Image (tube, rainbow, N blue to C red; front, side, top):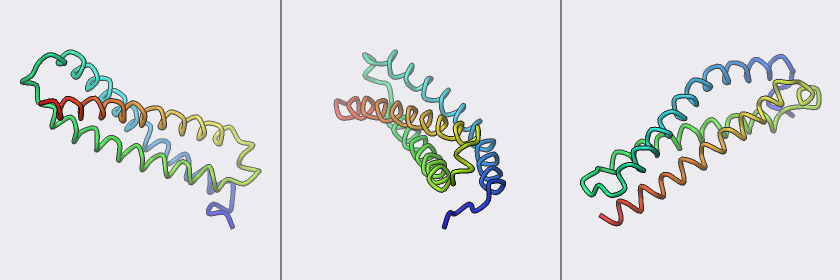
Length: 119
């Protein structure tokens, strides 16, 4: 039995969550871009503190993973009627976007960890 038995209930859940998380994703995207720039310009700066970056990236990874799990759960519980909607297609694209940012956070985390191990 699907978790979201009716199309209107599924769409309501999707829209509410999407409207809630979209600004958070935009903020995370800006923060990751900024952190990436900071790491890039401070590559040779031995006094630069990378410890706070590890914590910030961990928080972003946790937020992104939570959202990814929720949206994947939504998409997995969609029935055929829901899969025909544009919102379902948007949900799939949103999942891809979240996965891309999780990948960026993971790459940046590896770089930060290398810097911390090298200090």
